[in-house]
Image (cartoon, rainbow, N blue to C red; front, side, top):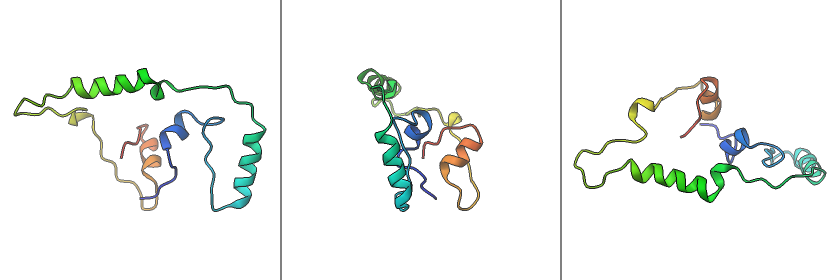
Length: 106
């Protein structure tokens, strides 16, 4: 599988000017990105999912949907919500999911 980003979620849903994706093997690309970053005025911003409240919501979802005392363990998210996609050789998981209007959660 091809990795195209260190943090695909942040790249797709937060993006510039808060998240920059740069080909680190290309020195010119890195220098241009750094110049752009230095010349960009950024208003402080924390996405909801990275706040304490957002984290607590995720934890709440996990703990309220699990029963560790039951012998039959329901799965969450439900298996019916899961999708397995097989993409072309060399295509990243993220791009295969995006092509199907889905969010990649490998």
